[in-house]
Length: 322
Ligand SMILES: [Zn+2]
Image (cartoon, rainbow, N blue to C red; front, side, top):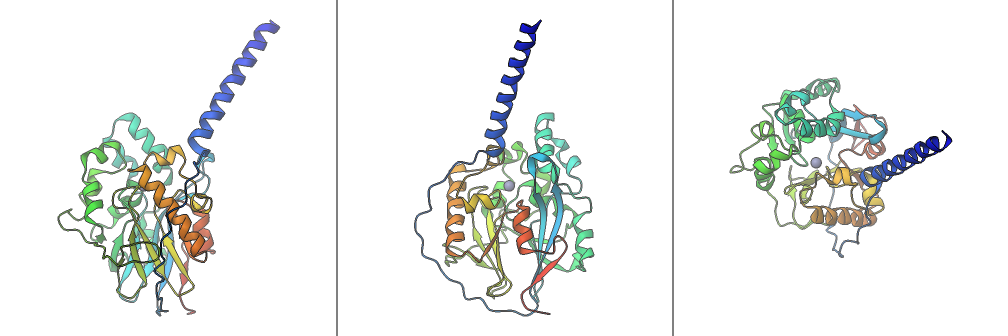
C-alpha cells in the first residue's frame, strides 16, 4: 500500500514539474536580444500647442492570473483641428465575430484576446468623457489584429488611417485563416488600392520614415514593421515635456524595452516576422535609453498607461494647464 502511495506521489511530482516547465516556457521565458545597431537621433522640435490633450479609454482588462495587468482599448487625442482615436480594442460582439472559425481556433482567440472584451462599447465610453463619437476626425490603428480594430465596428463611418502594406495584410487570406485578422473587419477598412497613410523619407527620433498627421508635430507616426507587415508606432507630443510613444503590440510590456528581451512564446505567436519584430524591440530599448523621459506605451501594458495617466482610465492629460 505504502509503495503504491509513493508511486502516485512521485507521478504527481513529475506532472507538477512538467506543468511548471510548460508554464515557464509559454508565459514567462523572454529571450535576451542583441542591442540595436547605432542610429543617429533626429531630435524633433516640439511646440506647445494650446488645446491638446490625450485621454485613456480602456475598453477591457484582464484579471486572470495568467495575464495580470493586461489592458486593451483606445487613446483619444484631442486636437483643435479634429480629434483622433488611436486603436479601438475589441468589438463588443467579439464572440459572435470569431464564431466563423473552427472550435480550436475560436477557443484560442477567446482565451487570449477574448479576455479583453468591452463591457461598454467604445462610443459609450467616449461619451462618458464628453466626446461626441460623430465628431471624431480620424482613427489610426497600430495594426489590424482583431483586438485593435474590433471597436471600430461600433464607429462605422470613421476614416481609418492605414498604410497600403497593412491593408494588404488585412486582406490576406493566409493571415485571416490564422484568426488574428478578420475578413469582416478588413471589409470595413479602406481598400489597399486607396491607402490613407503614407510615410515620407523624413527621419524622426530613431526612425528613417515618418508621417506628421496634423503637420504641426503633435502626432507623428513611424513604421514598426515586424509584428505585422505594416505595424506603426504613434508619437503624441502634448508639450515638449509631456510625450508618449504608443507602440501597439511591438512589445508585450515595459519589461521588453527596459530589459531588452523578446516576447513570451504565447504572445510572440502572433508576430508575423519574429526576426524583424525582435529588431524593433531592440530599437525601442535603444530609444528608451536615449530618451528616458519619453513614455513608451505598449497596447496591452497596463502599468505603462498608469504611469502616463496617473488618474486611471477615462481621464485626460493636458499639454498646458487649463
Ligand atoms: Zn497584435
